[in-house]
Image 1 (cartoon, one colour):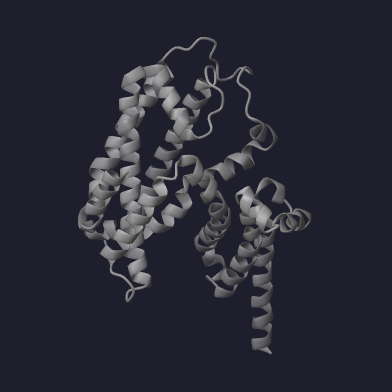
Image 2 (cartoon, rainbow, N blue to C red):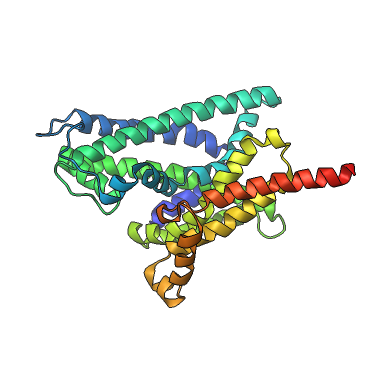
Length: 327
């Protein structure tokens, strides 16, 4: 991990062409090796496997609420949060290729995002398929890393270990590099007098190196509460930004929605804290309160109704202000 993050830091300190490097080399290489693995597994015969039969039963949480559980598991990809960090970088990369007028900029970004969404959907569907296929042989794994390791060993033996090494290294390299560069640039923009872009890159790299040695299970355990807190805010901001033209991007609605959203998401945050923290601070009292107040709280979506209430309240406040101004 030290060598890995040392490489990341060296590349991150020279960010001028880093996104081109990721787009032209790292990402295509990652996709090629990933699809090699996927297609080998898909076309390898396995006795008694039929994805449409009932011999492979879903785990209990997917039996009760398959869509909502899948929706919440999607938080762990951090795709939406990362898109906020990458968004500005993507725009700057497009501009660096001489595309500056608004129409061409929007057209290129929409095209790139559409291709990206399609590719990601294909990857997720195919990896889900090979995960289901492995259930004929293996029980449900504790995390995706274990599942991939078992699958590659089953179908490719030692070659599988080598192929998985390449895939995981490329996947982590491109993501870590992109995030550290984009976050460093963002924080330097927000706090220009605090640290330089390169100093932010060093700080983020050091922090990531330390956290990476906690192990995947611990990282997931400690990141889930933060994701449960941040994701509702990210989703609401994206929706407001996308459809903001219908209410002229009025700041009152943004403030009202975010206030209600953050308040409700806090209860999702404390619900998913590690047990020893929850017990020590008696958060179970607040959790029980939230269960009785917020619809959908039991399935991790207690923020939805308060967010809608915040949106409606924002509209009411705007209308009241307009009437007062007219009078």
